[in-house]
Amino acid sequence: MGRRSGRGLVRVLPGLVIVAGVVLDLVTPARITASPLFAAAPLVAAPFYPMLGTLLVGVAALVAEVGLNIYNQSMADPASLTELLTVLIVSILALYINGVVRRSGERLASARIIAETAQRAVLPRPAERIGGLRIAARYEAAQEGAFIGGDLFAVQDTPYGVRLVVGDVRGKGLEAVEAVAVVIGSFREAAEQESTLEGVAQRLERAITREGSRRDGLDAFEGFTTAVLAEIPHSGNVVRLVNRGHPEPLLLGADGQVRILEPTDPALPLGMSELGAWPDRAEEAAYPDGATLLFYTDGLSEARDDQGAFYVPSERLSGRVFQGPDDLLQALIEDVRLHTGGGSQDDMALLAVGRPANWRQPEWRRVMPVTP
Image (cartoon, rainbow, N blue to C red; front, side):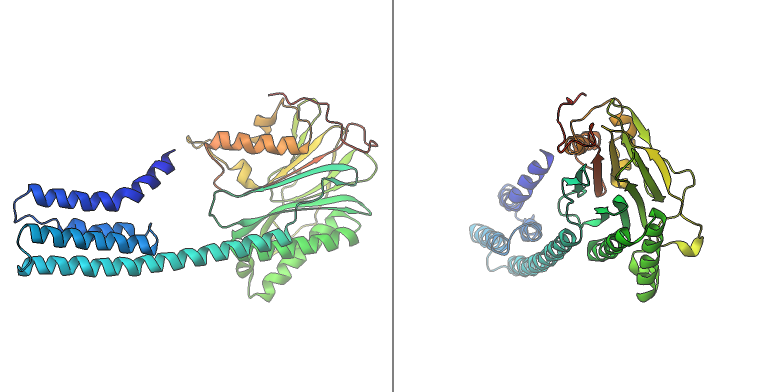
């Protein structure tokens, strides 16, 4: 509501300035001039109006200035001619400013379109069902018009089970999308070839380090990537995790209980091996039938309300039961908007993996009602 009223005011403000100038000139002594208001009107219009609109405002300001000079019989006065020339020059300047703003906006829009297209190419949404598991994924941009970031996710069925990665590359725009492409490409290859989840993590580490070296330093290649890798074997109700500096996944039970899957030994993000290196160790956790795994980036956990309080997903989801991964993510997105009063300040990637209550059933049975 506030944005609409603000835009409405911007649209009428140049006209109001001209009207105010006319009224001021008519009700005040001749020594008081309204010329500054007439000069201000096209400058106010320049950043917000199209070229034609800015031109019309400038013409209206000039007409008002000439009309008042004729009314006051001061058209031949040097001061009046100077004021008229000032309004003319400022109107021309406003047209130039309008052109600069418009070209900048077009370049910005073009860069965003390219980045979004590249992101859709390297970050496709996974299938709804992979390896008998139900999958739901969402990428939520922080705000309309903002550059996309480096949040990523990928899910792949492999001979070793369903493997997935959720991560966050430092940076935004095309550079971040390029880094995401390297991470996901390396993950898809390693997930098929490496027999262990630790091996997958090391392949990602080498890929990021190699790409950084090729570009004269890791800072040129976004620096680092936080990531959590998971492996869900085809048999057995377990999940294996390797966490490299990423927010901890949540395990949502069929009874509404929420468990935080914290790593025993916190590790550095991928791409920071020069600060210290130690072997990755996959940790195993129970993953019972009917449970759902929730992976997310820090855009979720760092979302704040108007008092500065962080969104805590484990607390907000505790005691709630959902019909499936899609319902979980939709409810989560709506809850974040409610918490922040509109949306997160950072992009967030969400991935939910649901194990059907009957592991062998062909389709997810949506019999569990949503409870607040």
